[in-house]
Image 1 (cartoon, rainbow, N blue to C red):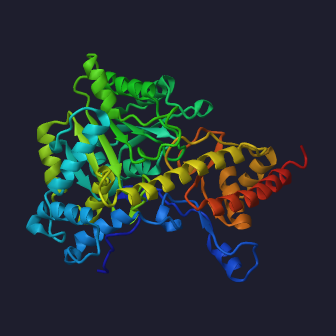
Image 2: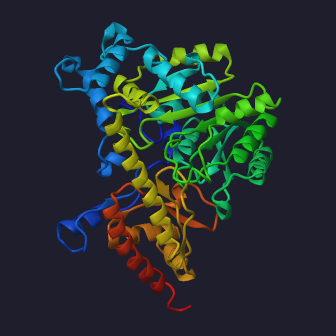
Image 3: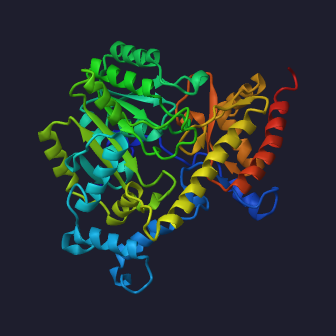
Length: 479
């Protein structure tokens, strides 16, 4: 009898091939070939498809890299290579490690000194004490989200309510685990606000389809729109979840990427849950909040650092999920990166001014680019863009002429897919179509990072404008 393979599309777990998650969804090969043959007016592809700051040239923050270097190689301590405050802090964290080594398995929740720093950060941020016992370090936000969605989704009728647009990791993970994503639409006409009507519509869909809503996901600031939820938005969402017996997962990985703090400051879901509790509301509502070292202004994506923090989770559940997490191991470099983010150098310490100068430069540059890109795009006919108040993306809406919609249909594509491929072919800018992130039917968008340097972005926008005007004109000849 011939051997029958176990892992094929027909014989493996069916959820595997239900997942559609790709951040490289355009034809790059033909463009790269044309670049090599010098057949296009650009010398490289500008990759605006991923939130990968250092992948497009952002320099790492010196203090963070010094911490990781000394942590991995403590022989550097006392050799006048590292600032004294870095040495002191490395010793403190190493003394908290198993075997006082960065190469050992650490406690399941994370290196105790790092966990304590995270708790102190959350306490200071929210003005409400946070217990280290509610925190678990993770290999980035992705691992935390996947680990936590697994026990939430019990069967195919369990629903997770997610924002649309939103990060496709959620939809993909929910499908992979056999659950159902139900979207609530953000209001593009009002800076991508979260509305009660949208939440109620998602709940009606659950009832109509016989689904059990289990969890409400908040992404704040939002990926891909760059919008930031208001205090009222978050309070209403917490009340809605409580009233409908859902827990809340608040994805807050961009909490330090805030560009319009006067109008749209970051406020954590945890802080507002406690505010509501003090007013007698939402008592016992389960909340998980997530942060990451991959985003913020540090962009240490490859370090895979992050944490999740829990409010009101059942003690037996916590014991069991920690037991499951203990099957693996959280990497130590990622924990050190996260520690720097939550516990930066203080005024008076040798590293403070260099750290502050580097971080301020990164933040103000992102802020300028967020404003510049949205303002420029809003001046183009056939494109509109809400100004991002956070994160590291713009999510402009494309208003394609009817002929463009027809051309896309003939090509077997959506209009935004056609636009993104044409943009790549003619300008060398790699973006992602809005369909990847979810959008209202009949609307078309693209997501673009604002991570390339200001010089690159200025040149890119000038060439993009020419392309865009020609693209709109090409499909408007008969109008």
